[in-house]
Image 1 (spheres, rainbow, N blue to C red):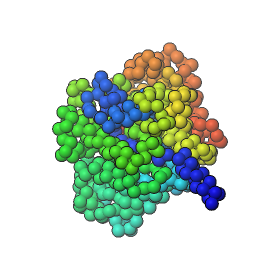
Image 2: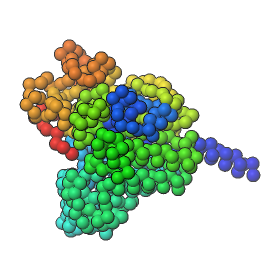
Image 3: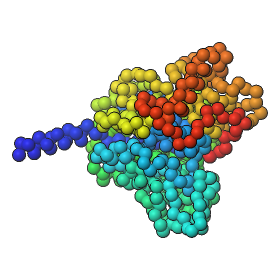
Image 4: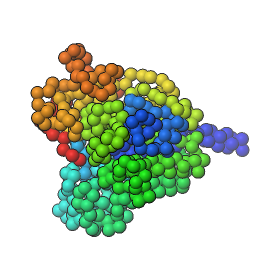
Length: 499
């Protein structure tokens, strides 16, 4: 009897060492959209996110691995930079084949190996094999796929439930990409037999409406928390405030800043509902809760109107979604973990969204194999208030590279690499220096290119990036192989097409 009791106590202690992990990923949510992080120039109320800031740690130098959707999501779930794959620029479409290799270790598969129940609820946007009729061929082209090609009665393969998740409910791509239909595990909940349009036209489930997606995902997340035993990992990838910007009637007009402000407020509500579900189940103290975004605010938000109204979604940084500038990939990153993370604390430690993999491995007390998490560094020391060296690589929508080390940020392009001025291929980009070097301690707005004054910094950081490419990794370990040949220096005439 005593031996059984000791075994039960040991098991309980082990479970206590494995926190639930809730990772909320917003879509196109700017750093400055969280009012607590941008008190002077943030005009949209975000009370629930502000509460998480007060109860946890907020990072001032957290970056997505890319300035657009798909590549960032790849980095989060694999701990590997997306530019090591076939995705050298842009994003996937709703019919694209899977980007994550079937044999690659992912965050959910790692956690599942150690007793976690894993769920992905929301926007996947990492590809899956859609069931097609004879002769149908789906590709990475965003406009590909039609109702006639789909065989919606058959099962979807190579989706989230084959990449480490026990459960999936959500949409295949962005909300402006067909097919417009919910998927549960490996099947459409309603066959996409109609045609609808949100930005793009394509097959849709007759009952599917864009305005219902955020409330539905929120409800599904709350249900999952309520019924699932611990430990669990919930990856909640919200569709908002990405276009189509569709706040529900309840939220319309709330912000006074138009649909985008209203949609941000509804997104804040969704975060609050998840936090409330944890409280109602009594597991707040046993849960590591992370709130972040996949990239910066999108121009679809009507940025000129927002800024004219005093709201600056990128706070004090230059650029927006798609850009190599900080506004493209600097994102809010807030961590609440009672008893582990000091409330109302601020970390200036640079981190990247690829760092989740190594962080989970450290929480579990395991070592990652050499062929996993090649670009992932645990941020657990940062949660303890420590600092450490961290070099981060950035990537824009047209595949332009940047590398950040300490105060220096080197951009291997003459332009924005995205949608802001100077756009790739534009007249204003012609004749500009081929690289940009900024001192981010004195010039956070990236206004003064000092590459000529510091050629040694340009050379050193370029060689560092070249080494990261050649080694197939940016962390210590055995060299790995990239999936494709990686080209660091892009042609200046290359344009960043809207995705």
